[in-house]
Each structure stands twice: as C-alpha cells, then as structure tokens.
Length: 147
Image (cartoon, rainbow, N blue to C red; front, side, top):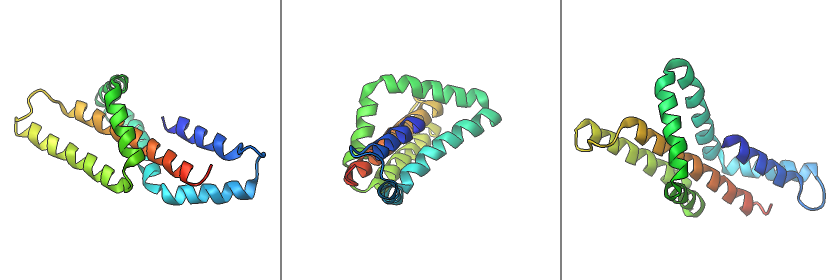
C-alpha cells in the first residue's frame, strides 16, 4: 500500500507532460512532504508494526493483517476511509477520531459490553482506516500542489 502510493506519486512528479524538470520536482516534493508529514508517519508506523510484529508476535500480527486484507474486500470501510482522508480538511482530526474510537471500543470490549468484537478485528479496522485515509489525504496534497 505504501509502496504503491509512493510510486504513483513519483510517476506523477516526474512526468508532468513536459518532461522531467528536476528543480520543479524538488520544490513540489518538498511542498508535499511538508504538508503530509502525518500521512507519511501513519504509513511508516503501519510498516513498522508489520515488521516488528513478525519478530515479536508473528501469530498475532498475521491474524491482524489477514483480517485487514479481508476488510479491504468490504468496500464500505475503504470508501469511508477514503472519504475521510480526501474531504476532511484537518487530517489530524481524522487520526485522533480514529484512534479515539479504537480506544473507546477496546475499553468497551474489556468491560464485556462488546462481546462479539475482538482486539485483532478492531486493530485491523484501525490499520485499514488510517492507511487508506492517509493515502487519500496524500493524494489530496498532491492535487493541491498542481501536479
């Protein structure tokens, strides 16, 4: 997911119709990276969770990412995440709201109010939501830069 977004962004930066202009690409890339630090932090943290999880607790990590893979086929959650990332002007509120909803649901699971949800499922929903919202928001910054 992260590699695809970066490749897509890089192709759009290099081929702007007139051939590559390195100084323009550098300025545009700096502008996008300056605006999208939170997006890259989220995508990098998902990658770090995957790598560290494979070394520390591979069964739990595998369960989370298999569930996340199944959630992507449920397009409603992908559409919600893309809508949040693309149309909410302040992306920090999307991130804080998603993490807050996750923490609230975990507390309710621990209090045995949500008996049908598991921590693995909720963490998978958080990863899918934040991942797709970050990519959609990154694309929004890319389009705002006039690329």
